[in-house]
Length: 109
Image (cartoon, rainbow, N blue to C red; front, side, top):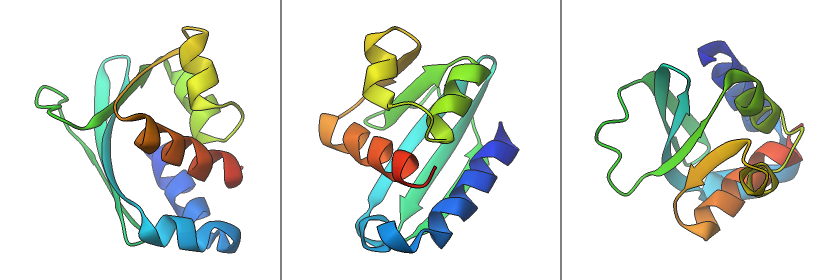
């Protein structure tokens, strides 16, 4: 999963068509996949990814699911909110930030 996150971060950085959207983004979130969780921070077009316990989620977005569902979302193969509605992923946080993540990953597939 960590390699998938790193690869997608590189793909997003190279996406000239979404450069303005990504450069303006300042968002932090957790991705929880089975037993592991990663903290991801996107700010000024740069990603910081680290494996971290999601115990202190606080006000951060949280996306949770199995490895297959998370991979489909991160690869832009499906929409986050559609997957949430179908029960394939859990997604908690502000709607505006969830839509931003959905847009970034979908537009870089």
